[in-house]
Length: 162
Image (cartoon, rainbow, N blue to C red; front, side, top):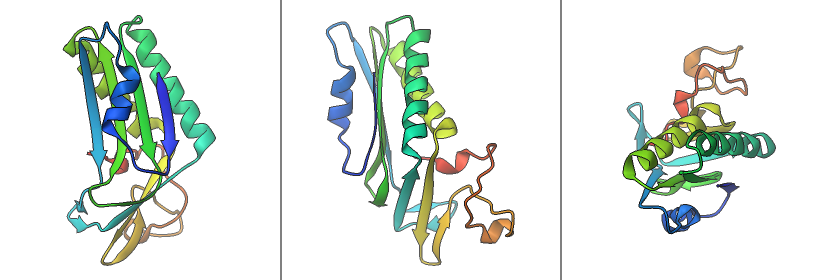
């Protein structure tokens, strides 16, 4: 297992190599890229921020759980980028290997879904109308004007990488 948060460019091949081994008949990879729109709004730049110690610890727990639940037949790796990313840049790469494709597909899906919902990494989108935090709501503002630091636990979908 391998988990990492980094500022520089990501490599799909490098993450896939982390889970490759002779018994892996299948390697599944999810690559989340910055797209040029979200919820009908143009996006020109994303900024990801993370509380690193907590984010890495949670990513580690997720990876360990997936591998443990698969009784040693699955290996997983995830690398998430932070900082300023442009349209087309890789934001996250997840990989899972297993003897067969079904286990690799399931493990990779479980990995990205858990990362999106549980890991404290936040996304700020920049568009023609300025910057805004995705999924955050400040108690002092309406949802249209939310730019504050509080983020409800129930709203993790705002971190879509896909």
